[in-house]
Length: 327
Image (cartoon, rainbow, N blue to C red; front, side, top):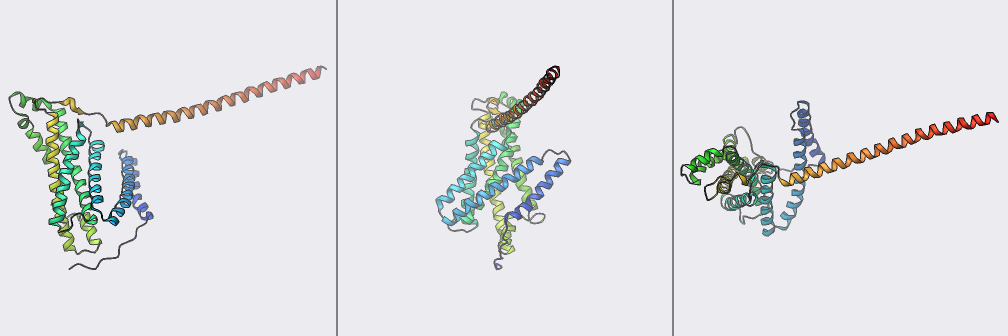
């Protein structure tokens, strides 16, 4: 039997500022110990504030409209943003047409698993209820991004840094499937390890956020625990499916149908977006220092002019005094 719904706590931006002070403390510790992650902490926390504030405004509108097309749009948007985060921010190595490959893996895993899970495992009818479906898709996207990053990163590292192993298999007559099978197997093991570890400690060592939120929202602990079980199983399934799809698509690109290892399709440079950002930042900094230098030189010229003008005035005054004394 569910307990009565508890009165929700009203939080203000001052509460958020107090929570942000914890990040500032971590950044201060990082700076004092020379860890080099203080800036990343503050940047990530700032992104967290901005992103959650935007999402809160957007989801409030979607919840009020209760429109299935709006829910579908938000679900697709979350997958696109997750793909962008994977390709642009998280992957140090990329390959040709990586964005559509990762997007296919994301959409092909999060949407089917979320629809089946919400409709049948969670018994929500209709399944697209915004307050039920959108948070589930968001959690699936978060777990799926982590799995894809691990699997794709491992595959590209092995192909780019240890291509001799694959080429040896291919030289002895193995198909690209046989040559790449050990890499794919290890990549999927690494991708699923965090999810397996999380399920192993959940409930005993850690109480997950969804269960905590359900309890704070007034649900019984028993119902909150069952809800968390279903969600964890959905995250595991979505992560596994997306990791398998993206791993296969990655291997198909870097080892082509002619049984050749195509490291030329692997890009190890920084993403063009960040290259453009760095160039723009460099130009802004150079322009700033040029302006500072021009103001400094102008001040020096004015000071030199004042000094020279004062010397000339003193010389003229002395000459006037001399001529006046002679007269």
